[in-house]
Image 1 (cartoon, one colour):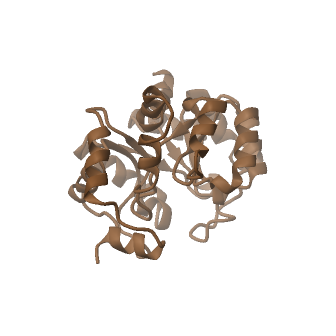
Image 2 (cartoon, rainbow, N blue to C red):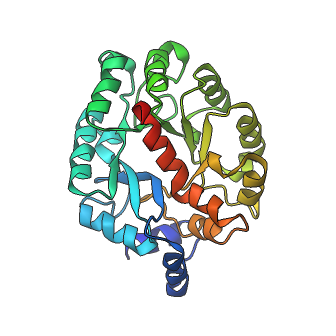
Length: 281
């Protein structure tokens, strides 16, 4: 059983038919989708996690994904510094992998936040991901509060470096607090579920610097309605590969009733804008 079969069976889903895959790839242009939620590296809990760049590229080609914003599994499960160096090295091997560093669970383990962000800049790392310790059983760090990570968030805000975090690891109050205290910080929430749409709608209204990944926004016509209300500029395509796979979210974007230009913003354009604006462009 390969990875796609395992994920689909365990989640009660079904594999994409070859005809559907052909239709999806036909939709992708030479500037195809950029997946902003991708893990690379070995993992004991994810069968067939990607350990080689060629495996990653083969999977991307299968789904018609042009590039991925990837963090390394070591950064989350073993050692953030080692994983960050590994993903930076992998990105140098292939232009199709863009590196995302992961923050240490505790700012006490960091050097000066400004120096850390400057080191990111020197390595052309234009995105940062955080796994808050209080809700992530794999880390033992501090909660995301202004007293704990405020100086780091200020440095990210100053340089317009986007911060990515999974919604189940933060409360809505914490998300609101960060987004409103650091109003120029591009703050990207992944894995928010369509069942939480009342919170999503409210925060999109209140926090212009807040963005959402699309993986779980699968309510019928839900993406269409969010785009109609708030514009396509607030949403980014993400898959959650290799733990999940994009056989649901890609068709919803490609075959939704929003305009083609709006689809391209979600699939690639919004990420490119955030990536390009870091450190002043």
